[in-house]
Image 1 (cartoon, rainbow, N blue to C red):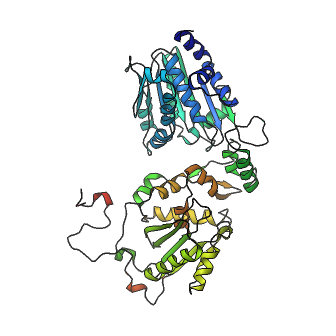
Image 2: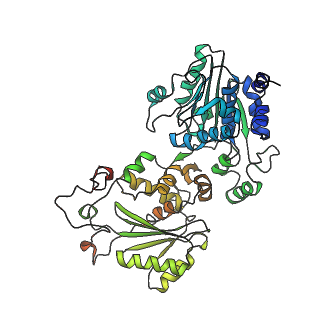
Image 3: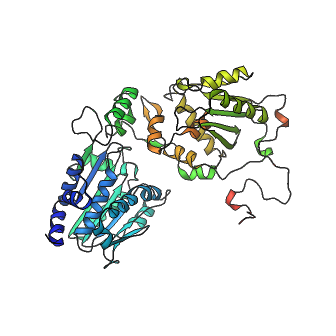
Length: 482
């Protein structure tokens, strides 16, 4: 059989291309999506977490590039980083598995193009600014035209509503063939994915679940994991609905805070006179599992300081480190995560050392129990409000991701934070730094009157009349090393 014969079959049956070109057997729901594509101008994959939806988008992108003449394709995601890490990496992964694709197409950081027709036969990565308005999103995404045109939209569950009208503009130019394909988790009751969910007469919607009770569930999410989440949080928990069942929750999921706000907080630094006599607080998150870290977080009023992290240490060792920090920094209070009993040995050892640590149960009732589902939610929101009031954070990629990728919703009119183990699965690491940070907001703390007025904050330097002000953004300061 000649290559044109293969291409004709693959155009009509993309699932055959996946089996023959990549040597992979699609899962049943992937088979359904692939075979629906040629006859579905608008195709949406409404998914639980982790079923392989991004790989399916990449397969469809390669299918369209390979089997249509001079196609123009746009690919985007919720952010540039997400596009690079997920969908763009999937394109590279499957290209490397197929010598035919490597021979015919070149892939750069932003474009995949035909070696023979680079200007007219291509797939482009498109992104928009985090704070872009509808007009700016339109400007960033428009311009996709041609006889064969396709939009691939990844992680659409949290897209701004303005994205979809721009993508659907490809149908207005009377192309020979045009498609908009999207995939995402059902996070928000607005945006492209929710629109597809509520307009099934226009959209072909493929629903993907990990529910152990559903015989058509995805095999890529283990039954044990799914059942554990259901048993622990309940079938009506909003995060179980989204992550396990692939269903929209009663109210939208929202990120705690945006990346730009956290970036600004990590550029701030306050001097002694700006902090004043604020209380010094230690937040201690104790590792639960072998790959987790124990974190000691230090905050004085509006200023926080570089955190300490330790792995694989005993309770008495950890308590010794906390005791030294307590003594050297002259701390006013120390809050230790006592959830599940993991911090008990640390707390007991500190008590033997003459300290008075305060155990905090993240699942305990919040002070404002009519507003917050538990203590963890209350502490997290107070921490976010502190950042927005001008709080200064230490630079940390892990803390940045945990703050900006942890979501919340409402259940029975009370704010509910995404469970920690779900956050850990999403991030790929435990949000220990985040937990240490929010622990410093467990209770109001007053500085000890006997020495409050004589304090100098941690890392405070002697006054230098020739130095730049410490409140300048860090990247604005003179660096003698260049």
